[in-house]
Image (tube, rainbow, N blue to C red; front, side, top):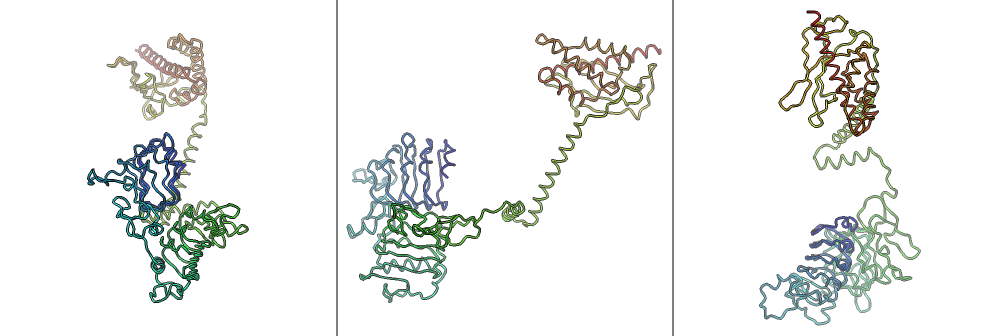
Length: 573
């Protein structure tokens, strides 16, 4: 597709050789690629002319162009002389006519064909591209051999770069070639005498001749013809009518019919593919073409994806070709299995995909289809579960009152320092949580619960010079106004100074302090609440500072608890 190719502006090499491609060469799209140097389109079924747009001004950068073995027609564009660096150019075995533009020919073009030629030998550099009309060669290019017969030979050997033998077939030989090409599946249905060499041509079944014994009509409708229409049919220069409808012919419609006198062509109801050659579409009077100076290819055959009752648009008031959605690749179709766009059915889609995949993988389509459905259902369930868990975790937990300290278990937390930001992490996966439920506890003189064998660790100076706070057991010790005042004093001592925004920092401290006050009676390990509250209230830099402040609050709480414990131990002693 030309539009897709234009999206690759840096494309340098495009090799599509021997891919059974058909249609027209997208010259404008290919010619718009400034970096395209190597283009290989040989051994396909392209029809129509060599596009002149391929050599656009300022963008003619192709070095090698291979288009041999196609069905291209018309002449070689003079614009190809813009390919000033072109050194490989192969166009043989097409339906090209006329003469090569002399500016294209030169010693640098296809120079390999002159490798063993003595330098003093007179050369025609155009022969290294393609032999002229009226001559043939083993490979369609130098050295060329002229066909016997002079000007008459040029009329039967019209194409450039013709290989093989010179065409000098008689009518009988052409019809024998036609018979052999259309009996690939066996003899025709009904009377078949085309292989009878003793039968006069004009007496063969389905043949009509004029007064001079020229074949003017071939009518072989519904005769079970299987094969293809041979190119040599174009050598019947007096042929006016060809009806091969309702058979099983395949392949492509030959552009050689342009050399006949044909006015009626019916190929409907077969399995022909591709596009009608443009030169056939421009033939005046062919199936009514040319009336009102209008020429349409659908007058010869409805294109692929369309149909009507006769397989082509017949006449000015005839039925036009209608869309068909049965994905048939054939042209000139008379029937259509699906005339409406199919409704989207997810079950059918899954079954089709499963069938295609099972054929590729070699497994049962039923098993594969069931597996696909099971995977889809499991994915939906997983998504719903993730949504449910996320929203349940987002619901605020029950807010406990201050109460007595023995109503709550003391939690043990392990704080791990963030290696990148030097801040204490508030992530759940960074903290171990252990309940002291299974260990004996006792109360101090203030009624606080302590583990007799608890070990408290303060700031530990490590080798890197940084402080880490290791596994520490603590609880909410703020259960008196005195402790609250001491706690607030600690906040003032541990606040983060900022020359840029002291006011904002103070507000961050107050916000964090108010948050702690609102959560008295809850162990300070409820990090997720603190994290959520800080994130919702303060964006950007204030969020970071508040997190630092919250870490300092926890550290201060541990210090107070540690000091309180030491004092109680000292008083007891």
